[in-house]
Length: 397
Image (cartoon, rainbow, N blue to C red; front, side, top):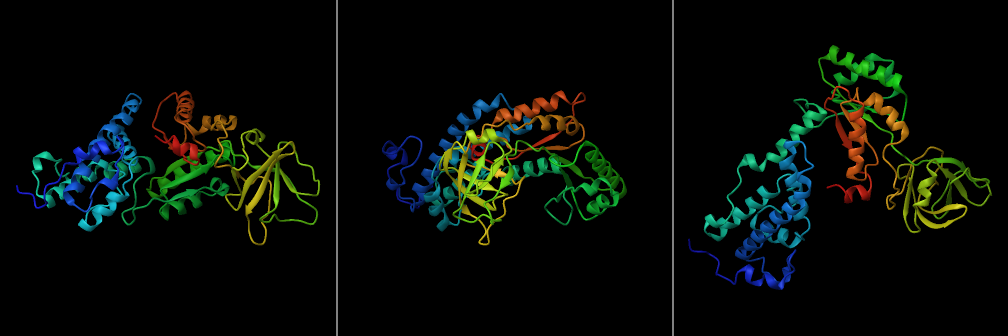
């Protein structure tokens, strides 16, 4: 076919001016659809090669064959996101094409669909380009996600697309009608927080869940959430005549029980070893983010936090409130001794295990090993890894 766009020097001839692993968009005229097409072709080649390089070390570790395609797609997505896509996104919008902003579950089909459409616009030989993906190929990621979600969380109701998970209070152990009411109102899954109650209470809760299933004809999955190594405030001491801490004030975190010296708010930390990991300038959050602070100094007395976020009326500091240090690698094992004790029950009663404070792949392997030793009759149990820290995000692949 005769191209509608005048021929230009090929993109390949200009690539030596660019870095090997990215594009120098200043040398490209992306308003020209032919050049935009060639750029996307080159990007496609790079994503395939870089994606294969990322995926290859994973291949031998993947035991579930159903995950091979998903793993390869993830590797290609990581390869794609290494590149600055903003100029390409802007160049595609005037042609009414995908902005490449929502292709997480379908990297190659999305690229191929855009390339195929540009091929039609430029009227080039279709034999030299990837074919347009089928609807089935384009939606394969959505199908797999739906299939895995149903396997783990159960089927959705006909009149809604979401699932409802309810954290069970202690009363769920004593009131079978409570569970029946939850299932009648559409609950798909219940969560048992292992940081609260005990084995006897959990067993009673699950018995009531199973009874409610039989009475309502509905299915309900059970997630048991391990407590993990959660740093919290211990004993709190306050300056005289002060009950709340304000922005601009100081809180001293101590390893031992604090002494009331009348100058600053002080509080012990339930996991004092984390104080050895904290550095000046790092961030701290208290009570689920209600109080924010910056590490101002570290002395023999403890870690001095400068409060930079608090209620205008002042915030209360109470024992047992959570501490979060998002900038700090605390180097804590995600499984505590109590978690291991709880796993004796969890391994044989839960459909899913909620796993807090996951940081590395070794953390996942550790839980898998602990579960395996407690399951003489192996059965499927899902691990719901909580990605809660910058370290976990960096190690997600």
